[in-house]
Length: 468
Image (tube, rainbow, N blue to C red; front, side, top):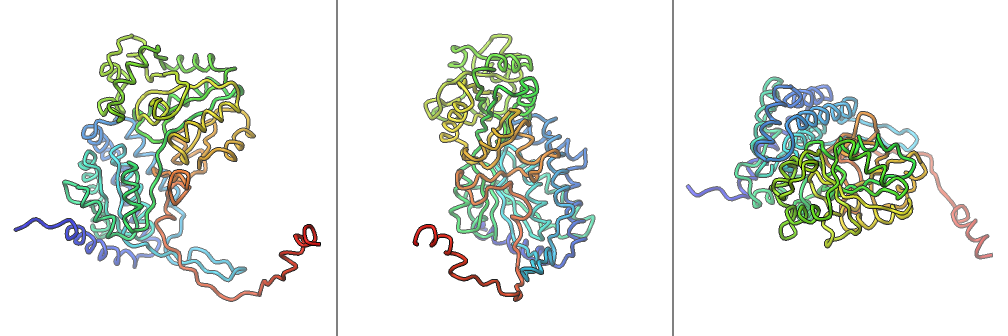
């Protein structure tokens, strides 16, 4: 028998997903919420989390098992907190003054592209958001992350069976996942959500299906003369080294004002960072980039491995938790100014805060526009100034950036692993992608007392100031 073509393979999945989603659409809010909790337990269960994290690192070669365990647990638990009281079935809002009643409706079948950097946490986030809004979901895992994603779904099925929910609410493309299969999925589902490479995001935006994609990260952190340097260094280290810098929200560059540059460098050294010499920096650059592309042998690897690959032998460097290099420019000719997904921080010296903003803007114009900036400062005015002037959707203040950007228990952002970058990053949303992006809302509109205006109401002041 001839193998089934990609269109037919995906069409079969769509048919099964449609039948399961039709059942889910009959669930009331309590049943939906139980479904979400049951599904989440497949990962929050400590034994499952440990085994999935070990599998993810073993198959992708990216990150650290212990950190993936923490990420899977906290990201899922935080999302469950956000979803717990959210209304996603029936009437979700009544506004008597406007005469509008809002009713939650599913989008149908969600297609999700899953990155190799987070082959467990990201699909779970997408699955829970989809199910909360009574959708079915089909995953397209990266080839490297496919085994752990498949195992996650198998564990989810055990929980779905436990509560009598249809398994076909959660499916994945058959292995091996090819570009043709992924493109067919993008075309046949009702909504696409993409996290990962910009090639996948562009494919999603051109597939003809409504899509939420996210832009590239290249986080720059500004540190001014009012910052608590010791606290800033500790937070930056915790963020940069978490899961070996696999997060798009890990700091890549630090822009430090002249007044505290040396002291901040000392604080970073005190938390076991190591500044490379110009010669070592040149050696690392040659090893980290091959023909314009990052060297997979060095991505999300411990510093000792990076030094071995690069041929750096100095003990302080090899035993450091992260490396630092000094840079003066940004752009393709300055590769350390871009996103590295490696345990390397690029340091910039700025004359003052205004100069620091200029440096950060130059870096963003090269890569990472729309995503986020970090600020370590005691000045709330400067934080808001960055929000007014810089082309980013998030300014993270005095926090470990990779923990804060995707939502944290001590800030107000929704828990997410997909950060929209607005029009600056070529995205349709500037928000952390969350459950409201997985829902249609029908508005029932009644008449209200008329709120008519006259020409004088609108133009009177303008006419009196300019036309009289």
